[in-house]
Amino acid sequence: MVVQTERDDATWYECETCGLLFDEQSDATEHEKHCDGSDPSYIQ
Ligand SMILES: [Zn+2]
Image: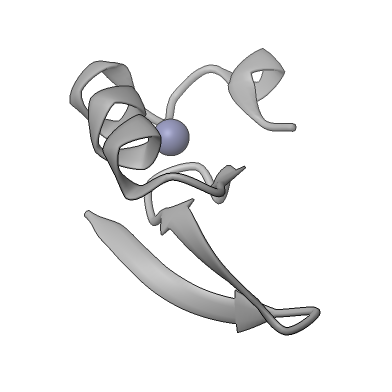
């Protein structure tokens, strides 16, 4: 699931599975489709 979050006066979209942040909701949604959250190297 992608969650919207405010940080540094900007809106970010966070992949709830791995915690990765995106500035575009479409990027976060696309990432989340492929994110299984089980690979530690995937976390920024
Ligand atoms: Zn993710």
